[in-house]
Length: 80
Image 1: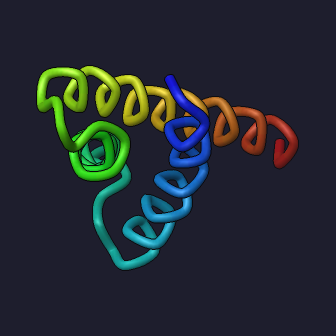
Image 2: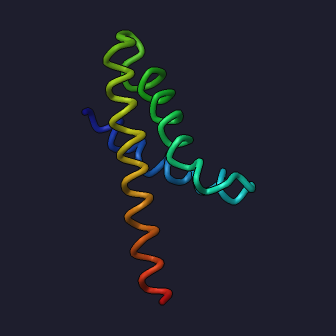
């Protein structure tokens, strides 16, 4: 994955945080991350090759979900 894909992961996490604060149920955040990852993968990372855009979008969206989940779990541990 190129550098733009790596840079999109924290951007997607930020967007998902805005979506969460807008009132969307937090159980849908991973789905939002996946949809955003696919959109960015197809639209920005690899617009000329849809298949590679989808694959890279999946990587980006799933990475954002994993990073979001990991940070959330660590933050909950510090609150306790």
